[in-house]
Length: 163
Image 1 (cartoon, rainbow, N blue to C red):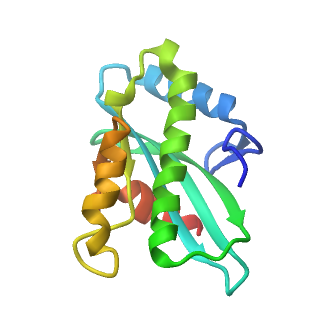
Image 2 (tube, one colour; image 1 turned 90 degrees about the vertical axis):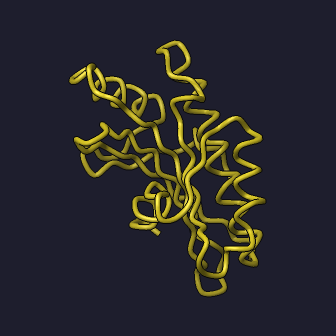
């Protein structure tokens, strides 16, 4: 699997962008309305590809709370076969790796771990309910806030739209 900085992110608004360009668009979005509250959300969703690996999509969402937002997404296709548990852990790991890379780019702009939410595509209902404590603990131990379904729109709505 490749690093998220290789290749490009996609945006319904801006098209294909490098991660450096994503940083620029995030900062421009915030600068247009600096008095609002913002959330930087990162989430990953995945979908098995008929025995031909797994399609992982990671989304970066900048949410102007109460007033919409913009997002960017990146697809990584892994040829490896995953069981559900491994796939969920890989989703969380990809989100954490993306968050680290995004924060490295935004640290000089005043954005810290406290401004980032990691959204995981698990909830208290369904096949993944037994994994909630483990995955939430994994994300929290990395220093990030974590949201699960039904509040994890970064993974379960935005990234899911592109898997």
